[in-house]
Image 1 (cartoon, one colour):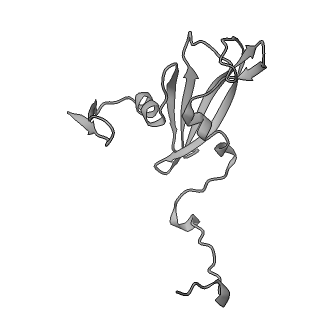
Image 2 (cartoon, rainbow, N blue to C red; image 1 turned 60 degrees about the vertical axis):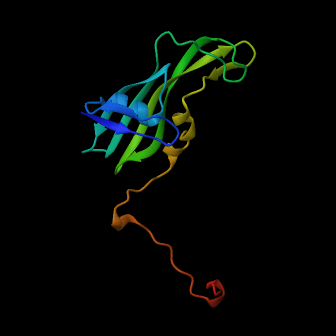
Image 3 (cartoon, rainbow, N blue to C red; image 1 turned 90 degrees about the vertical axis):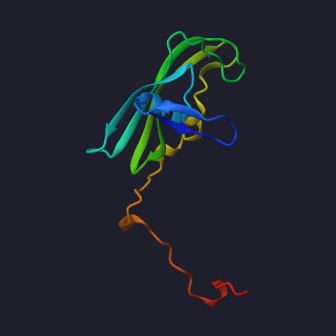
Length: 150
């Protein structure tokens, strides 16, 4: 028995219901080769979050993101991003992102997958959960000039 997924732009695809968590998150996030999801840690009790670890696959070639010239690995740095929530749990993406040494541009971080680029600054924001007691409704203005009339 499988799960049937369809889209307006393409044919239906069938996936087996025993899909692994790493495969599931790789598909949900759009992680493609040479990047891969290496771990999905559920920290539901203490931190209320899902931590998805992403890494560049072994043997991947590194290119300068500005001139696309192949370069040598200089070092790497761990980066963390806050992604959209998985249900009511924060989703944190963690990746050890390499830096490449380019003859023209010097040492520069390689281009990361789209899902990481789009949310690169969101980890710094303070997101609240969607529980009713934490929803803040702004006050409604009471002066007559702020009221719309047809």
